[in-house]
Length: 96
Image (cartoon, rainbow, N blue to C red; front, top):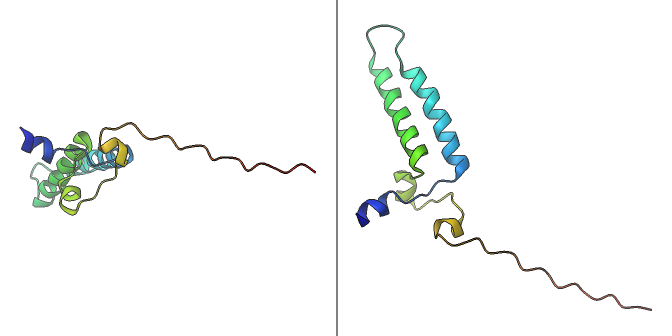
């Protein structure tokens, strides 16, 4: 089970996932053949659509994992709350 969790660790941002879902839906519509006999291109486009939809739904991309890419924020990926920026100390103005 640890192996599966490590493979499916989320490494895509919400924007990345949304783009993949939109592209997946568009490609899925294009994969439907206009004729009763589908061509090999329909199967290829359908496979790419399926991959885009699955990675968009799970938030995990094996290619990103292979290259060590991560579009999530570092704090979110580690499961930690995002650190707040410390306020800067104001320089005191000299009075005349």
